[in-house]
Amino acid sequence: MASSILDLIQERVILLDGGMGTELIRHGFPQGACPESWNVEKPEVVKSIHQSYFEAGSDAVLTNSFGGSKIKLASHGLEEKCYELNLAAAKIANEVKPEGKFVAGSMGPTGKFLKPQGEFTEEEFEEAYAEQAKGLTDGKADFLLIETQYDLKEALCALRGVKKTSALPVFVTMTFNHHPRGFFTIMGNSVSDCVEELEKNEVPVIGSNCTLNSEEMKDLIKIMRESTSLPLIAQANAGKPSLSTEGEVSYSQSMEDYVRFIPQIISNGANLVGGCCGTNPDYIRRMSQIIKEGQELVQKT
Image (tube, rainbow, N blue to C red; front, top):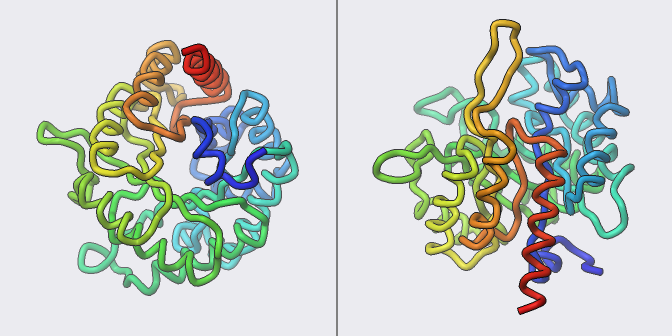
């Protein structure tokens, strides 16, 4: 049995989990509240979501800490609880982690911008990520995932911040938009720029999540694979979100359409696959079957 996620990546395709926000809403999470607050207010709900993903076949689940930096938490007046909420997030996931599985400490973007576009300095971003990483590390996350990064500069701040307080492996996923001339972050970072900088900073695993649907993700992963030999993560959205008149969020890509691109995402070079917004344990269960079938096919040949 692989002792670390990095060892397991060398052996086979890894299955991550799907959307956390989608599942929290299904469990009655109120719009506009702070998802991380449920790590202390309703830990049993968060725990049951992690458990449902492990049962669906996830090799690793992401903690409920996507917005857990003190900068992001400040919008809810919870910046002083940054360490506590992240510590709880990792502990909750570990309570239901089966043997041989892993917990990833999720670290999403601050939602703010660096100077001159925004008001924050690089040092302030680093400090925010450092405190979050400490909570997740002390809560016994197995690795950290700096995810959904739309600004390469912020991703690098996050990396520097994490390294101040944690010795855990740190993976990074950027989020790209699809333009006629290729894939770029909203800050204009190209795929090659992101790959080059993250490699230079010795990130062991890189990739992309969010924004793109699974069909677009297969094309992005092909481009990323041409630029690097590092293990790649792919976590696509279930298409674009839309809001009904009743306030219900739905996504444009059906589960059938979503999963039909998973084999190609893997054959194009993804080593770790999972879902992002709009996906749930049913998607992960189907993806688990697809991965198993693919492995059986390889073994037969």
